[in-house]
Length: 210
Image (cartoon, rainbow, N blue to C red; front, side):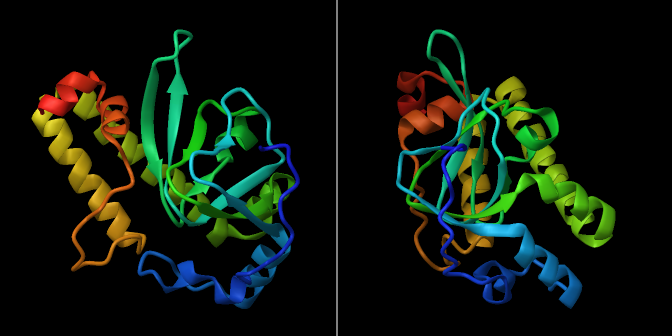
C-alpha cells in the first residue's frame, strides 16, 4: 500500500484539523500551518484489516493518523506475530522507513482509518526551517520509546494478570486521550483475544484463562 498513490481529496484542511482540538496538540503559528499545508499531499482512507505499511518495504510517504485504530507488529519466519504497539489518532507512522531506508515493522488497521499523507522528502526541510515542528516530531518518537519501555517491562517481568491489567489501562487511557472513547462511556476496545495474546507474548489459551 505504501507505493500506491494517496487520495488527493482533502476533507480535513489543516486549518480545521480535528486533532487540533485535543489537549495534547498545540496551535501552529501561521508559518508552521502554511508549511504543514504544503507538506500534506492528501488523505488516505483504509478499510479495517488492511496493511498500511509492510515490514521491509520503502515508502515515499509519512502518515499522521486522523481517525481509527491500528497496530504495529513484527512477524517471525514461522508466522508468529508480536504486536509492539497500537496506533491511534495523532500518531505519526512511516518515520522509521524515512530515516532507516525501509520499514522495520508492519502496520495493520483495526477499524476503518483515515490518514493524512505527507511527502517524506520534505522532512529535512521541516528540520532545517521549523525548529518547533522538528521538536514535535522528536517528542512523538520519544513518546513511542516510552510506550515500548513499558511494553518490554510487561513481557519481561510482569505476571500474565499484571500484563493484561496494564494493557487494558494503557489502551483505555490512550483511546480517551485520542477521543476514540469518551470519559463516561463503557470502554469498548477494537481488539480480540488474539491481539491481546500477540501483544503480551502469551498463548491464546493462557490469555483466555487470564
